Length: 379
Image: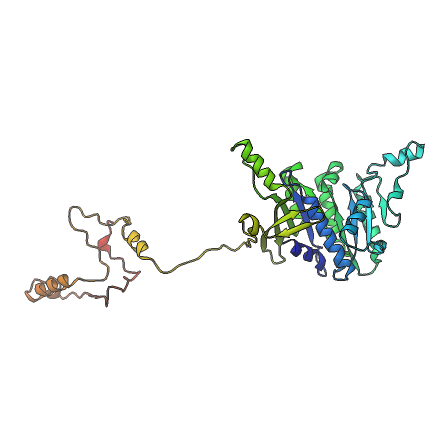
């Protein structure tokens, strides 16, 4: 449900709550995370231009692509960028992330390449190691779009991996948490190549997210258990398409997981039903509630199987026929009991002791569940 996670970012947060955060993660076997990131960026930009989003602008923190790339991307997606300086700002952490080019320009050994993108649209960050300064620059660019009032803006980070190259996981997590908690930030989303880091790093970033979108291959390779030709065939089937698993964390604590297939072409990313092409289920809705179905009726086979079960402490016969009382007396037993009673052989009647005799109305009536005579137990 790619559109659902886009709507979550569009709707933003309620008063006093943290902004919704989306983690888009992929792996080497299905390296299409940036295509999903671009799709979300384009959809959110369209919502902002149409005034259908809580945010009034967006700040792109560009680590893996140049600012000019994103301008061209939005143009290819049919988004009007003529007035882009009014609703979008790009923090350029790609051109000179450590300030080396700036130092060389000071000595005259490097040309200024800042003319590639209009100066009113982007700003260069010359030290990505300083996350406090990075945080201040993001807020400064965002407030430059929406002002100091109650209007909000969104934040998009195209590579958390680049941030983790220069800073520790707790520091990066702290930056993301501060961005989510800021009152003027409506939503935030980022891209992560999960197989480049340990599981604890990925888990920490997912913990901060309200929505996690995992890009997975449509067909899993055998990992050496099958022949190379079969693995090659599976790899060919995964080219340009895959499966997107989206996990939503609700405010009430419940989790909903949805699977959807996607197909990548030259111009865009198309999210379609996986069922129509590969026989897989398009949407699998899951929740934390256990899905258990109870059937109070027993089939004939289940009744026969239950009758064959040997209960503990039950008389096993000892060479005699097994008689287990089930609340029913056969006609032969009733006639024999009546004959014994008429002939004076019934000791219970003579001794004055009473007994309760129960006859079932029909064979369809099940025995009472609370009847468990002691004479059937070896105690």
